[in-house]
Image (cartoon, rainbow, N blue to C red; front, side, top):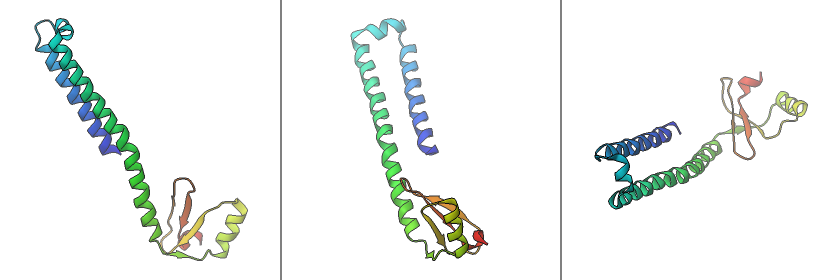
Length: 127
């Protein structure tokens, strides 16, 4: 997400710079904005800015869906184990749902899922 944010900032900065250079090139900046030819350029700048905004608005949910799909595929590949009795007791005590025990020797835990998150942990964390 950080990279997309920097791309958006770069595009907006370039657009602002181009607009500033265009106005500075006019002998009377305000007069250029009201001239007939300038309206076409202002319109094209507005269309460009709108297209950039539309691309950014559409790309965020598409990227979120892609990340969800990729993460659910990776989580599906993890080898699951039966829940140890200590973990079953902890789940009953805390009333936590969607807990999975996964293979691993080091103590690790993470959460994955969008609407119904699941807690994944290794037996090393339980002991």
